[in-house]
Image (tube, rainbow, N blue to C red; front, top):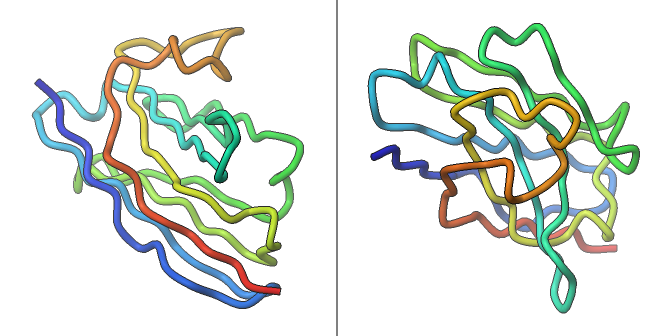
Length: 126
């Protein structure tokens, strides 16, 4: 069983930056595709970004492209999300997700992921 634990959330002013981390248990982290999703109050959980096991494939949601950067350190079983130029609309709970296989064309779907963290709150004030 894989466990994912997010950290790094908090309150930041618009234009600021935060770096989220997701630490994974288990010895097979390097084989998982990892994604970040977010859920704003009253809205459905939405895709943010995914990275393949090797890091060679990365896909971002249009809303964060150019502002967010995902990376992973397989030696540390950790995936990161660097968030710059934050906007109030980026506010929400951010979830880390893992998939046994790269989800291919459905990487944006929640159902493509096998493991989920508990989430970390990000609040961007205007």
